[in-house]
Length: 236
Image (cartoon, rainbow, N blue to C red; front, top):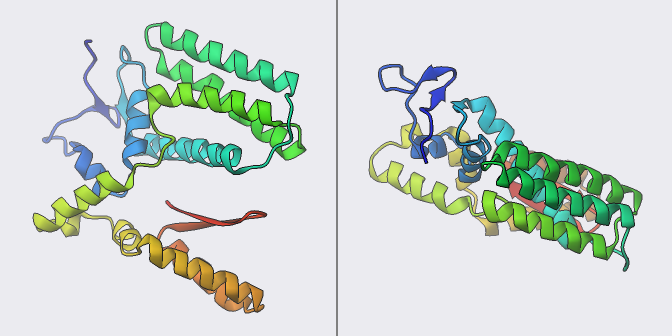
């Protein structure tokens, strides 16, 4: 395939312009590999892409929405049965998604029906209208989406780890975003221990300590999500 030259903030990318970034540079700035992939793949290959950091932030938000929704489906409990409206919505989303890909790999157009399905399904869950059969139908649509976009499964830690290892070996840790260093300084086990301590503090009505732990984690890029099924955490 022939693709057009990349623009960065509306200008040609070049070292002389000072707007030349490698994938490693972006990882060390704290952006996730999946967000970079989403930003790049969401522009149809015949269109000239204008790479911006705002676009990376938008891609990050889109991935968080996908992953949060996917967890909501896979971890939620749904009554047996099917909602005809949601079954039809899933069928339409799948058809529109495949039609967009068949239209010269129009990846921008392909995203739209999937995110519209997510919006409708989230509303249905909130209202108690989404049933087990609907969950399965929607998960099938998400699987088809991820077969191309490949961003729902969280595999961001390893590319970031490799970039940080390179920076340390090359004496370039000064290039690493401070918030990224703070995030990587906490292991999963350490986060789990703090989450457990927070839960105990809340049980003992020590809300000051519970809030302190939440704030400490937030400062290091760890987001806590309280739900009826317990507490989940994720790295920003």
